[in-house]
Image 1 (cartoon, rainbow, N blue to C red):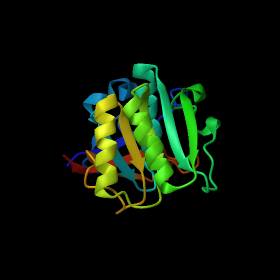
Image 2: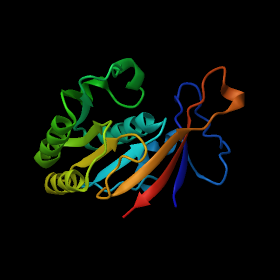
Image 3: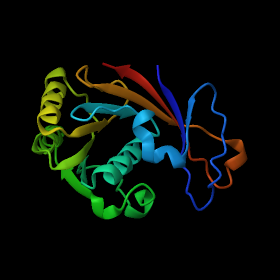
Length: 197
């Protein structure tokens, strides 16, 4: 089992790279984010899943890493009925807002179909799909085949227990609360791999 504890640090506030304790986890710092592959082994050409209260931080960190390393666009697919919106100011610390293309799907099947086409196309580095319904084995397998064909990475952000057996990896993402930094807000994250094919 891999457990990562990341401290998503703004370099203006902390450039010392000082270790922060997080149980028995592997430690990763802002200066290591450029070499994230050695700590964060997500295979390209496959679809992965993330759930939990910090799943969006996981998705933004992955998107930022891929945007910096490939200089390609990230497609983020959301369901149109969702009341929350992605604010460019909120994710600008991860990657430039102009790297993100947002798509709103009317239904669950529209979101899956859009993701499948984008994965198969291969011109996008990462396809993030926010879903609120379970992914069946057939749909999950179609996403895997499309990701393989387009050599594109897919990430499904969904509630716990709604993933597909076809996913390459499944990550449980949660924030780690730090009593000493509550005034400024803790950015410590715990990402635990639950499934790895």
